[in-house]
Image (tube, rainbow, N blue to C red; front, side, top):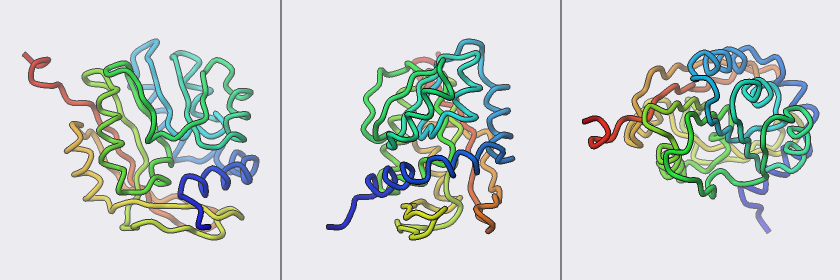
Amino acid sequence: MERSPERVVAEGYDRVADRYLAWTLNGPTRLAYLDRVLALLPPASDVLELGCGAGEPVARRLSQGHRVTGVDLSPEQIARARVNAPDADFLIGDMTQLVLEPRSLDAVIAFYSIIHVPRTMHTDLLGRIASWLRPDGLLVATMGATDSPGTVQEDWLGVPMYFSHFDAPANRAMVQRAGFVIESADVVEDDEDGRPVAFQWIVARRGFEPEMAR
């Protein structure tokens, strides 16, 4: 039986948990955008990290001054996150199925995680994220930079892994339609296990609804 994208992602990150952590700890793009998040957040913000992995370095650093909840499909990643970032809260779950209170968050962070969600679900997911954020709430997310309807890369860090995304102009339009005001949408090339891969990094704010703007 063919495995669902969610199962491919969860099992892949379970199997590659230690290697992935070692590989990502010092990723320069991840660290640069984490510094940007930290500079933009007001003190004691409520932050949700989608696809939190092992909690390093993002959840650990964010939880030193903010209330952080991390969500990930992989039980192995969450087990490590609870050790690496003991001041944060974590749950095993599918980001597309989360039910949260409207306007309950100051920021949603999604580093290299939305790219593992089937792109047919991206519009709905971004709408959910917008609903969770307070007015002017922050979204920082890694999106794809090329068109990929949905594929399984059979040898990604030694495991099969599912990816799906739109190209950069489509992402930008989709984020804006969800009610965000984009501050930047830069395409950055990362080294992915010895090969260059481009990602689009979105920094955006939840727009004010008309009744809130008056």
